[in-house]
Amino acid sequence: MSDERLIDIEIKIAFLEDTIQELNTVVCEQQKQIDRLEATCNFLLKRVKILSEATGDNIPNEKPPHY
Image (cartoon, rainbow, N blue to C red):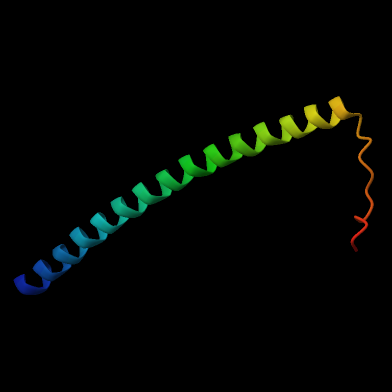
C-alpha cells in the first residue's frame, strides 16, 4: 500500500470520526428535546384530567348551533 493511499484513508477516517461525533451531539440534543416534550405532554394530560374531573365531564359533545 502506497503512502499516499494510506494518508487518504487516514484523512477519510478522521472525517468520519468527526461526522460521527457531530451526529452523536445532534442525537443527544434531540433526545433531550423529546424528554422535555414528553414531560410537557404528561403535565398537560394530568391537567386535562384534573379539569375534566372538576367540571364533572358534563360538557356535551354536540355540534355548535351554527353548523
